[in-house]
Amino acid sequence: MKWRYLKQTLFFGIVRLSFLIIALSLGGLLLYITINGIGVISWDFITKMPTDSMTKGGIMPAIVGTIYLTVGAICVGLPLGVASAIYLTEYAVQGRVIRIIKIGINCLAGVPSVVFGLFGLGLFVVMLKFGSSILAGSLTLGFLILPTIIGAAEEALKAVPQTFREASLALGVSKWQTIFRIVLPNALPGILTGSILGVGRAAGETAPIMFTAAAFFTAKLPGSIFDEVMALPYHIYVLATAGTHIEETRPMQFGTVLVLIAVVLGIDLLAIIIRSRMRRNKRW
Amino acid sequence: MDVNMIISLQNVNFYYGQSRALNDISMDFSEKKVTALIGPSGCGKSTLLRLLNRMNDLIIGTRVEGKVVFEGKDIYADHIDPVEIRRKIGMVFQKPNPFPKTIYNNISYGPKLNGLGNSDLDTLVEQSLKQAVLWDEVKDLLNKSAMTLSGGQQQRLCIARALAMKPDVLLMDEPTSALDPISTAKIEELIEELKKDYTIIIVTHNMQQAARISDETAFFYLGNLVEYNKTDKIFTNPDVKQTEDYITGRFG
Image (cartoon, rainbow over all chains, first blue to last red):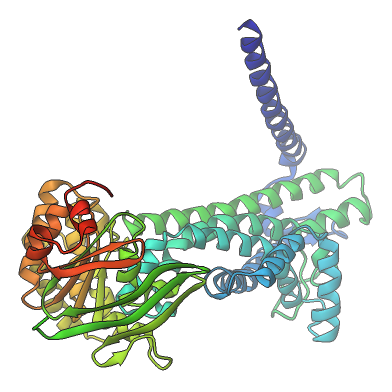
C-alpha cells in the first residue's frame, strides 16, 4: 500500500519536474533575449532603414520582408494544403497508395529546411527564373509548411461529424457542394489552428530563404514580388556571423530576435482572433 | 397488395465486403402508406432502408445485386445519378443531425443548392416547418442556431428539412429512438399526418410504434424477409412462428 503511494508521489514528482524544466528553460530564453535586446528596441529601430553598414539604424526592411514572405507562404501553403487534404480524406479511395502518400507527407515534415531551400533554388530561382525574390521565397516556404497544413487540415476534416455529410447527401446535395458548404466551413477553425504552427515555422526559418529570397542588404523596400528582400532570421544570421562589427552589434542582434518573436506571436494572435470569430459566427 | 407500388425490390442481395447482409429480398412498397421495417439488431432492416436512397454507396466495399425499381427505373442502373434519387427519396436519421446553421438555413440549404430563388425560399421554409408542426415553436427564432433546439424539435426540423425538398418518399431510420416519450408522440402524430402526401418507410425497434403508426409491416431476421403483410395481420395473427415470437418479445 505504502509503495503504491510512494510510486504515485514519485511519478507526480517526475511529471512536475519535466514541466518545470520546460517552463524554466523557455522562460529563461525569453528573459535572456528580452534583457539583452530590449535596450535597442525603439520606434526608430522598427521603422528606420539600417545605416552605417547595418551597425546602426533600424531593421524595418527585414520586418517588412519577413511579413511578406510569411503571408506569401500562407497564400501558397494554405489553399494547396487544404485542397490536398480534401482529396486525401474525402475523395481518394483509401488504400495502400493513399497510405504511402500520407506517410510520405509526414516524412516531408521532417526533412531539414535546407533541403527545401535547395529545392527552391533549383526549381523556382533557377529553372523557373524567378531569381532570388519574394515569389521564390514564398513558394519555398509554402512548400515547407505544406505537410503541417495538410496534417492539420486532414485532422480537422476528419473531426467533422459524418452525420453532417450524411444529412447533406441525403438531401440530394452533391458531394462537392457538401464538402464546400458543410464540411469545409466546419473544419476551418481546426485548419487554422494547425496552420498557426506552420506560420511560426515559415516566419522563423533561415535556410529556405537564404538561397531563394533573402538579401544581405537592400537599400530600399521591395517594389514587386520579383525583388529580393531582407528578412529577420537571415538578418540575425548576417549580423551574428558576417557583419562588420559582430561584437558591437550584439544588442541589435538580440533586438532583432525579440522583434522576430513578436512578429511570429503577432501573426499567431491574428490567426487565433480570426478563428474565434469564426467559432462565434457558427453559434453552436 | 392492391394499392399503387412506388418502390419495388426484386431479388436484392446486399454485401458488406464478403458478408451478405440481405438475402434475396423481393418486396413492394405501397404509395402513400406507412411501412414499418422491424426485426432484431443486425437483421438488415437499416441496411435495406439505406439501400433505397443509395446511402450505402458511402460505405466502401458494399455491393448490391438485384433490382430496386423506383418510378419504373432501377436506381442501381449505371446511368442513374444517386444525387437525383436522394432528391426524390428523403431521409431522416436515428439521431437528429441538424447542420450547425440557423433554423432557416437548415431548411433552405437543400432547395437553395437545387436552384430555388430567395422569395420562394421564405414561403418554402414556412410551409415545411408547418408541415413538420414546428412553425409555431420557432417562427420567431428562424435566425437562431438549430443547435439551440431540443432533441425533439431538432428531429422535427430534420423532417422539415427533408420535406423542403418535396420528396416522394420519406425514409426514417429509428427517428424517435433518441427522443423522450412526448417528443416521440409528436413525431408519431406527424407521421400520421404526412402519410396523406408521402410514402413513408420507417425502421423501428419499438413494436408498439410499428403497430400504432404503420399500415404495413415487414419483419426481418438475419438478412431475410420473414413476413410482410398488413400491420393488423402481423400483430394479431402472423403467419410465421418467428414473427409471433419476436413481436411478443420472446426473442430479439
